[in-house]
Length: 89
Image 1 (cartoon, rainbow, N blue to C red):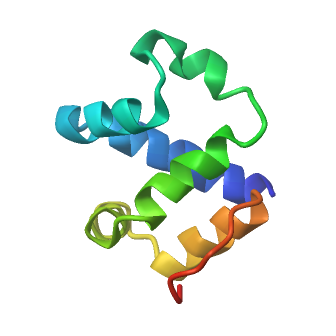
Image 2: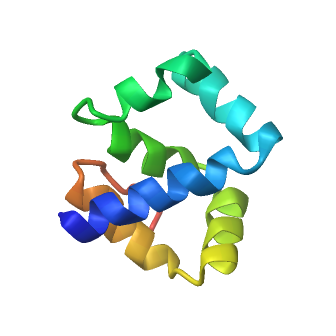
């Protein structure tokens, strides 16, 4: 689970570097940007972060390319944190 959490935190950090992507994440999550740190402590939040990119293949592939990560590793991390993979990853 530690590796899964590490990937999710890396994804969140990566999302935060792109204002357009971050705004989309915040909008879909319903969180105010000032609530992110607090929300990150809640169970299920990190799975939600991974779910965000798992549900948009171009974003997933962009993350994987930028961070030298494999999509299947992100999918495994997502599952490890309680997410359900339904798109064949």
